[in-house]
Image 1 (cartoon, rainbow, N blue to C red):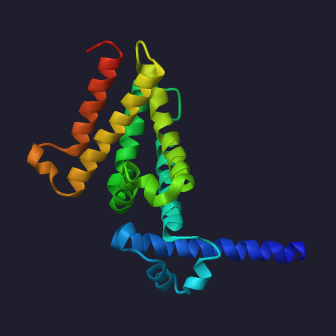
Image 2 (cartoon, rainbow, N blue to C red; image 1 turned 180 degrees about the vertical axis):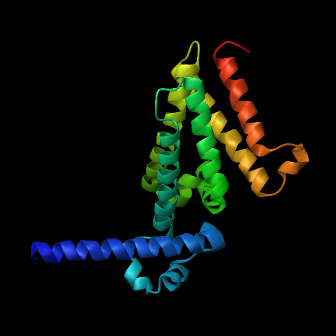
Length: 209
């Protein structure tokens, strides 16, 4: 195949792939992974199921791409928020707030990303897809963990990772409560609670608590 034709085909395949991913995102947001089907995704994309299978092996394949794109976007926001030479404690607060704001503004993406906290994830996605999603999540956690390490008086690797994971878990829990309209029971604002948690954590890690 001539180079120009190959390039055109690659562009066409990329366009088709993104069209399918965008349509699948809408289907997953409406029906979840379990309720979605390749047929429903094809209908939303305006194509046949036969047009999907050369590009994706399964709906799980497409779901992993959808969640992966979301993780890439939120990781970019966190990285941008922490750019500069601010003290580690301030960078950590900025990064945490950026993570919170992103998912607060994109609740459907948070709902889909909760699959990352599912212990049954590997069985659903298979080892390869699960590992790919875990690598992306690890990049996000590493950004926060690096600031935790810098803000800690006596850091060691397993503790730094644990603290960063606990911070993200707390943040996600607050968002789930807020988006489920449960946060008012606590009599406070989710963002305020997150800021308090982060400030207290930094003080404790720095030996000031």
